[in-house]
Structure formats: structure tokens, C-alpha cells
Length: 177
Image 1 (cartoon, rainbow, N blue to C red):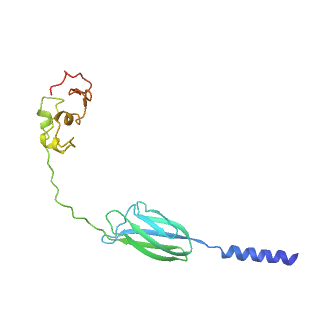
Image 2: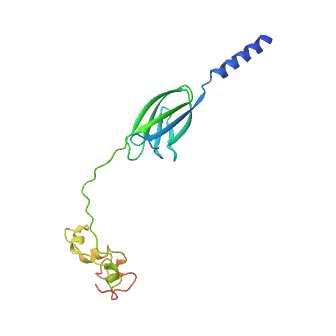
Image 3: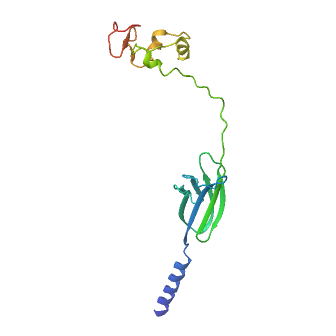
């Protein structure tokens, strides 16, 4: 009985000692060009399928069991970085992200003068040009003017068989179409 108890205690002590320990993995994301921190970078760790996002200081700390991991770090405006690390004690991994820029095509901005809304005295007037009507879907290849007007905000059809328009809840004779 005494030997069984001693054997059990030794076996339990060895089993507890052989369990995997968790270690802290601290990940710092920095910009390679400026050495400044990269805030809110996404970190994905394989094979545990865990991770997170760095804080305002570009840091993330995780507790993981001892083994080899692949750390994938990505952030909008930076190239994705992949690093392999053997976590056998508390470690700090500094990830240097390379900024990547995008060349946009030509951008054309077309607008009307800001004073046009102030100088125009007719409130509630909406315009629908022939060019805009041609862009709307058509029935049997023909552009329907009255059907196109029902696409404007506040304009509704009086019915399927009728050609009248109801503007913002008014009756058929209360509009100037």
C-alpha cells in the first residue's frame, strides 16, 4: 500500500511536470521605413488559428503552448509579412512591415458651382436629362419618359394603366410635368 501511494505520487508529479507550458509571445509591428509603430495590424498564427490585432502601440501579446508557429501579419497599406518562430520561452517578435502604395488611374471630378443652389429661386425642381434617361433600363428598347420620371425621388405612378404622375402625395393635376 505504501509503495502504491509512493508510485502514484511520483507518477502524478512527473505527469504535471511534463505538461506543456504556456509562454508569452509579444508581437511588435513597425514600419520598416520609418521605424514607427503600425497600429491595428492583423496578426494570424498558424497552426492554432488564433491571433488578434495590435493596439495603439503596435503591440500584441498572446499566451501559447511551446511549439513552432507561423506568424502572418497584415495591415492595410502594407505588404503581408510571414515569420516562423519556435516558442520555447517568452519571446518578442518584431515584424517590419513594408509600406506599399497604389497608383490610381486618372480621376476626373465634375461639379457645379456651390452658388447654384443659393441663386436658383425655384425650390423642389428636379431635372432629368436625356443622357440620364438613356442610362436607365428600358422596356423593349424604347426610352419611356414617364416611366423614367418615376425613378426620381418623390415621384410615383398613378397606376399601371394610367399615364399620370403623383408627386410627393399630390394629385395628378398638381404637378407641372
